[in-house]
Image (cartoon, rainbow over all chains, first blue to last red; front, side, top):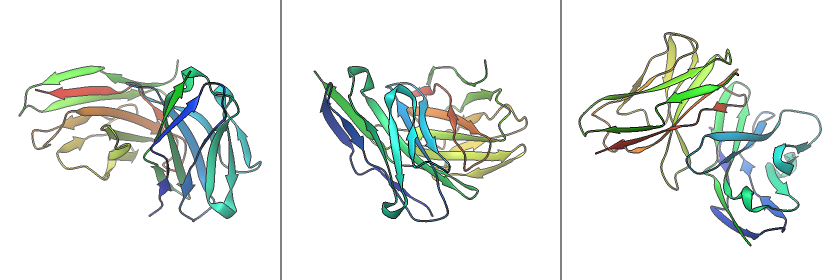
Length: 112
Length: 112
């Protein structure tokens, strides 16, 4: 069974600092990869997705992610974090008609 | 507007009562899902359906039941057999099981 690992349960960054959230997935068929954001008490919103092609993917809210096949990673980045980015972030992977599996999430705290 | 609706947003029930959570989508998606969220436990899959009149158990199906009589609707019943039903429930849909999922706003169920 495929798996997705988000090694960091909780991350704290200062407003204006850069951000990188890690996501590793189990090796398998060419993956479809996703990053979602969830604010407290809300549903999940898709930030970006990778299906094929350019390995650097741009998303909404100024986020980007890079697919690195050799490292089985799909890390999410943002050059300058805003207080409104405080939320929980989920990485997900689907592949070859296998249902999407999600990581356990990383909670981001932004301090002034 | 296309999207997924869940109702109600907050639901209170007495212990021992069955309760049904509604999920409707007008995205013409074939696949639908139910997840449960508890603090610090990420998304846990309860049931999913790839097509009308078919559904499969997820990781934590015990104490829950679903039906998929229409493409647009995937109601979840929390039965009295579910030992700890108080949680946040999320419904999602997608074109196929390996593709990006679109999430509803969630229903917070509290059993008193």
